[in-house]
Length: 191
Image (cartoon, rainbow, N blue to C red; front, side):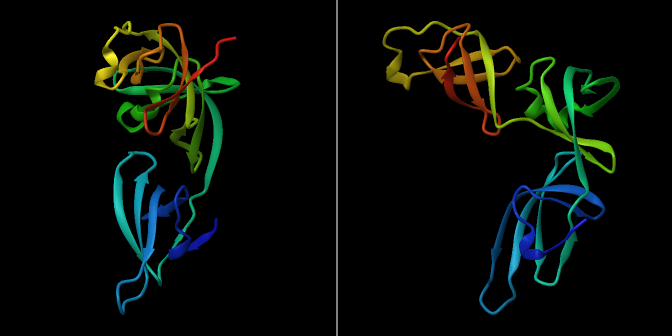
């Protein structure tokens, strides 16, 4: 486990702060006039998903969290819990509170493979690819003259999520979505 000085706490690193795992969402090292440099960070708690802002001063250090990863399959979401099973070992099932992984689960269809981050051998959170391909299951038809309003329509995807797309997207098309922003990227050519 590496010890990070204040300026090594950068985006995408996972640190241990107050004996809890946090992912660094953003960091900015700055210096105010005659004072010592400070690293202003935004941290997301891996388990609860809560975001907090912490300032690390020049003299402070934090340990990098001991994170291991495992492949798992998404099973279902029910009664406020999202369930997963370890790939190759279906008996090893575990759940996350729906609220802590809802922003990621909405892009998953049943049976999708995800990467689970383990903190001290316990599942902490999931990682999904930034770009995800999903099929459109509901798309309103484009009406001539619609382009005056910007040329977007709301479509429903096979995972249940809804996303704004250009007017030429139809039911049955496979589209690529940016899972971090929730935005349409492009239409994937069908084979």
